[in-house]
Length: 391
Ligand SMILES: Cc1ncc(COP(=O)(O)O)c(C=O)c1O
Image 1 (tube, helix red, strand yellow):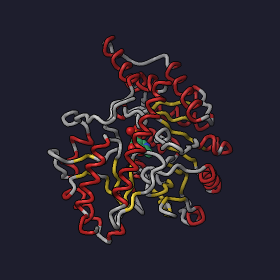
Image 2: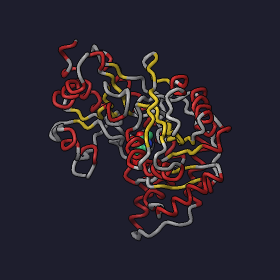
Image 3: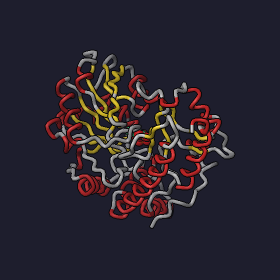
Image 4: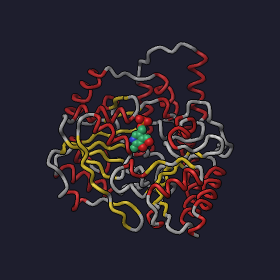
């Protein structure tokens, strides 16, 4: 049994989550709780630590080559965990998936194009798209029975006609949805109708709560293989985001050619630390750890949801995947500045601001639950106190 309970002090380690909390949010380092950026307060599995120790013991950190072992680890993982057959030569390794996203935008669209996002959604998508001189078409998700759903009928009428790509977040950050096969096929049909390349960012696809089943887009909609780009990574799953490496997986030869030309033009080659860690992580030992960590997060989310939903006016979306709780404060009737101040100044908790995730996020804050249980319990107690007048 892995010990996720014992706190690990991350201050003074250049952790953006903890060391930048005070600067970004004004939440004091002295007794603040960092529940914003999406990394975990846990060590990765021992197999990953051993891989790094092996590198350290050898002590020469040169360029990485002979990728077969790494590529086969990815193939093994995708086959055994997701029932998905991946070919070695379909895999491109980028410097993480924000980089993967920007490479897709660069390779498959041109300045002036628009790109469809289903908002609210992971904020870096819009940031990268806009920085690259492309536009964002925000297709809002709808809330039904407290969860996000797609709304293709409305979206069909919302496009500018300049869209050439859609980026899907599957499972969904920040709403925590595991999209059903039917919903994924709806996305595929939408992309076909509007002639869009589909980039499916599945960085969270291993962090699925017990009882939930994620379907990779490549399996849900094999009929769109000619317009599909898959993105996966070990970094979120195993808490090794600092390794900055991810995989863009493309089955279609023509798309692959365009992507590989841009990789060449941008001079992208892999970071050996990421390769060693990923190879070690995608293993039976890594798989056992993922089962443990998801069960632990599931325990955290139950405590968090029970405590938050007991506060009148607050509602935490049911988390089917990810460790990011998406809490709606609209029922309090407070403007965002007020509920945010209560969380940051009153509860001394740093959480992501909902408006950064695009249309529909304005009344939300996002809380990271990948932290020792006692921290979640303390956060809930502080939030209950900060909104005690509503009880
Ligand atoms: C959907 C999604 N994609 C990408 C990333 C970040 O990817 P990377 O660290 O590999 O750049 C995140 C991080 O939270 C994410 O939620």
